Length: 487
Image (cartoon, rainbow, N blue to C red; front, top):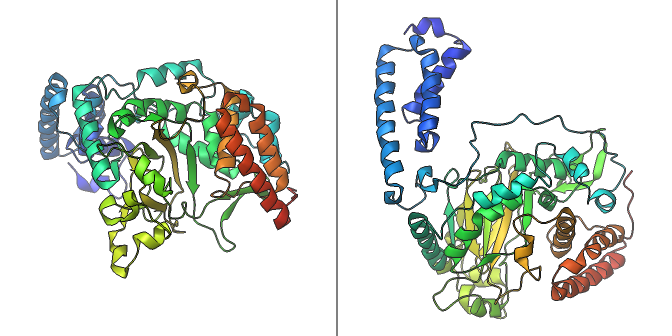
């Protein structure tokens, strides 16, 4: 009403009312106002300092507020009539438990008393089965909280029961069959856990020298996976979530010398933690020619699909995934023969034009088949934050057996010891992609952790992992990386 009184800096209350006014006018997108309760919240914030705003703006906001009420009442009375696609309003997920991002709990102070001279893998061996150990590392996350199993069961996205959601998932399946991948924008899926807290947890673990996959020691990623079960089943044509899970922290190098090494609380060099400066190099998740034949059903639906969830924004600056869609990939189903996949995909200079970047905001979803040729780009040093993500493959057991003999026993959240065994297994499986098992000592420590819980895993998986462990041991011995000081 009086612009001069607001310059150069208006009072905080006036700013808050202006923010609420802009959201009520629709500048925050409909997803900010997905319920009557949320609409009332912003209306109250707007009214607190309404007198400071111009009469024209007040009239516009009140008119927009009335329109929002009408829209929400319509959606609540007929949610299944909303159009399918990435712009579906959150009211489609009515009844799915979710955490309101406007209500956050202030995290406790970080513990800073771990001894940096101790190898983090030795800490895993000694204290990894202790919930107190993990709670001290990331006190804002949950460890063995019995209520989280209930959250996991109640927050499943009901794509098998809700007709509208089932149709939506079938549309995603069509894109998966035709293109080899599909994406859902951030803000559409109703995640029931604090994604920012998960991202902070992964960054804290990496900064302390632990593999990013140690996030599986916490309850939150298991809740995410449980939420995806029905969506994964319908969108893939019948795949179950396996436990071949991964987590990623990509951060551009600082200065020189390659990947950035984390530093301990005491300011010295950390215990060998490395944040990757780029995502994994170009590859197919299952690269054999046989996987191109056996990996699909008669209707074209894939028997192996990865569901990749960014916990921070994945952009060309911070690193996002790049794919070559199925129509531009001659080896997608036919196989690559004697050529490597990269030779087969990029036969001519103009073939590089087929590359498609897939940037996603935090909370989005990217699903891609085992045959899609993809990679994670290098991060720009100017990126404001690391690119942090988790990945959950969904697999038809007729194509690839799950890691556990009876996966249902492990759902929704397994005991802490089994999680520790799974973490060790995944570090061993992806030793070639990550840089954790740099010495024989570390390799032996990691194997001893897995071996303690190996009885819970499928025998053929244990046998295959044992062979890979032996081969990695030979490589490290030949390279002379038998021991390493962590002082």
